[in-house]
Image (cartoon, rainbow, N blue to C red):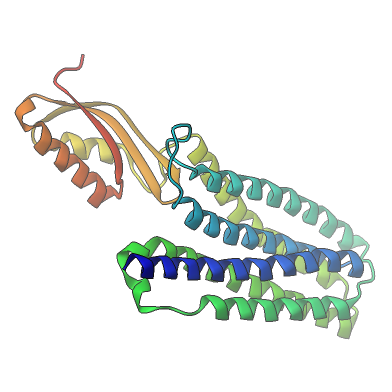
Length: 297
């Protein structure tokens, strides 16, 4: 059974790697194409592609590093690498979006001549690559529906959404190229670019805020601190709680530590199991460290 799981895992990683190579190659083609054709739309879509290249890379990191054992120097393992990469990706995209806004504003008043045919061809190349990516990620095996594969399924699902959004961007480039070729309306390039930058920014800003919150060990946005505290206090035998900390190790992996005051030490194991059960079932917190106390000032 374990060999079968490992085979499925390797198959998933191979799929993600192949799609990442295809997506990254199109990203490079768009960067080169934007320089050759003077198209800001290609540069803007390259920025959009960068979010998705980053997303695919993070999916691979998530699968790879969850299998690496913790060390005495890195007791939580290497989970935070995913968050650091995510933050770096976000900062790069915000800077790129600002540059696209600036260039788009300039192009509105002084539109350069754009080579629409190469631009449309590059967009068509991107559409083919994204269709291939969707096909690669589209297959499901029966065993993928088991609970122990849920995390990897989510990574594959996330990668499929990234590729789908790339496809929309490629179609936008093709349509813009056709408009410029048929009407010589060069302003379409700036309009599409600014629109794409506006689409990228909210996603990027949200991702950056989440990454910073994780690195600052803030309470996860999906968990109510006061609700957790009050739920523990309502357990029979618990008389107090202090030094309650809730944080995220990496996306989808929350942790908690707390000192819980109880009166009857003979029931300590029963109370501890009840706390852990509530944390896991109600709040999806599976990593918890509870210190039981008999007194607190």
